[in-house]
Every structure is written in structure tokens, then in C-alpha cells.
Amino acid sequence: MKILHILDSNTFTGIENVVLTIISYVSRHDIAESVYLSPRGDVEDILKKFGIDYYGVDTLDKKTLKKAIEILKPDVIHTHDLKSSILASKIKCDAKLIIHIHNTPSYLRKICYKSVALYLACKKASKILTTTDDMEEEFIFSRFLYDKFVNVGEPINVSRIRRLSNQNITYDGMVNLEARYLFDAIFVGKINEENNPIFLADIINSLCRERPEIKIAIVGDGDAKSRFFSKIEDYFLEKNVLYFGNLENPYPLIKKSKSFILPSKEEGYGIAAAEAMVLRVPVICSGAGGLDNIVDDWCGRICGYSKEAYVAEVYRLSIDDIYHFKKVKATDRKRIYLDNMKEYYNKITNIYAKIKLEDNLWYIKNNVAK
Image (cartoon, rainbow, N blue to C red):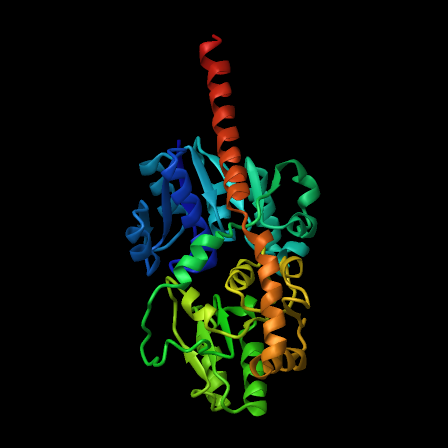
């Protein structure tokens, strides 16, 4: 069996890491041959490092995808975002389609071009994978697709995260890397509208007014990066904010932060928050998507979109060692329930196996039986 994973992103962040995890597992256990397709970019070097077969395109569109499918001849097409799902559903081929919805954008809840386009794509899919039960409930057209949904969650590999967090990594401009904590707070993720970057800049500005020496780390990239840093410059916060760009391994920086801040408007499972708690870092977040299933007031704080609540919690965690210690201990208890790799792999491989079985039965019915 050959599986073609398709993404319209050329950077390496959370979703791309999930795809890498799936491909690595099915390849290691000889379950399937996998190919990763996306626009060319930084992700290519990372995939090559892990020995992942990569098919790069200049632009992901119907023409380039059709050509790729003709060359690669996949048995299964596994898409991971809206654009790739719509394009794949429009191409006539023998491959079975799996649509993987990793987050809950606002368009899922209303009738609009994007939700209708996704619904039409989902009608042609064999399975629709989600990361929380809420996704199925929130998708406005889900009642017409109920028999296709499977909640697979997201993979949280506790041992791998902890191992990577202990790597000795140097960063430009960073000194005293042996200190227990380097940052009062850290943000890791795509700097895009979904992650609320302007609101994040406002939070940082208020924090700096309360504590001028505060240090915030920003890891990631995205189409709102320039607007975010323009706001940081407007507030004269360049000395307080350290930017690291996209990192293949952000875990050493997360581990050395007193809190993890995530004021996102849209979320799926909340994998970034889960990974932070694996590293014993309290999470301060909006509660969007699946975050309220992971974060509570014991191991962090759900602040919604109250700037004052974010500022108060980050500030207290940065100065009150006893309060911080209690939150850290609570993340230890959460970590036990977050490690789900065996369950995740079983769900994914069972889906692939079922599709393969259906193909075999179809072949027998239409060829051997005759």
C-alpha cells in the first residue's frame, strides 16, 4: 500500500510533525510506503534528515497534484488541510481519500464557501479524521457525514519529547543556557491570525509595564509575523522579546520557560499545550478547541480573551516560586494521561488496514468471483 500525505504548508510546525510521526511509524513497521507532498520550502530539509520520501511542488494546485498522483500512483490520499482536501477530491483516480481535520476554524460552524467546499470534499472521502469530538459536533454539515468521522486525537510521545528537551542546543545571541529558567513565558506555533498574534503583543506590552525585565520567547513563523513584530516595535519591546524563527526542536526552550502562553482563536486537540505540560510547563491559554480538555486551573489557566487574566497569571508564575511549583506538580499528574502513542498508532493503522481490506474485497468481488 502506498499513502500520499498532502499539505499546503512548506514550513515545519505542529501538523507537519504529526504527519512525520505517522509516516515514520507505518514505514518502520512495514505497514505502508508513504510519500509527503507539499510546496517546496524549509520542510524539505527536515524530511530528508528523517529519510522521508518527499515530492515537492512549486505551487499546490490541481495541475501539479494531478501530475503527482499520476506519477506516484498512491492507494490512499491522506490530506491534512482545507486546500489539499478540496483539490484531492476533484481529481479522478483510484486512490481512497482520507481527510484529516486538525483544528476547528470558524468557517466550520457556518454556511460559507469554505464549509460547503469542505463538505463536498468530505462526501468523496472514505474517512474523516478529527482530533476532538467537538469537531464533528461543530461542523455544520456533519449530520450528513456522521458515519465517516473517526476521532483519532493527536500523538503525544512523552519519552521522545523529554529526550529532545535534553539535547544541548546553542542559539544565536543566547548566553547562560545552563540557567534553570531562561524565559518568563514562551509562545510556540504559527504566527497567524488563528493564534491571535496582535492580542499576544498586547499581552506582552502589559506584562512589560508590570515587570520591565520580563523575557518572552517566540518560536514559529507565519503570515502575520510582520504585523506581530511591527506591534512589538511600536511598543519598544525588542529587548524583552527573543525571536527564534522555526525550530526543528523547540523543546529545550519550552523546558526553560516558566509558562507557555497560547491565546489562540482556533485550536484542534491542543498539541502544543500538551507538549508543554509534558515538560512540566504551566499553560495559560484561551480554552479554544480541545484546550479546555487538557488545561485546567491546577496545571495552568484558561483566560479566554481577557488580557488582564493573562497578565496576572504570567506575572504571578514569574515571581511566585511556591505558586509556580504547585502548577508544575499538577502538570506531572496530567502527563500520565497525555502519553497516547500506542492508542494513536492503533487507530491510524486500523483505518489504513480497513481501507486495504475493502480494496481487496472489492477486487475479489469484481475479478476473482467472475
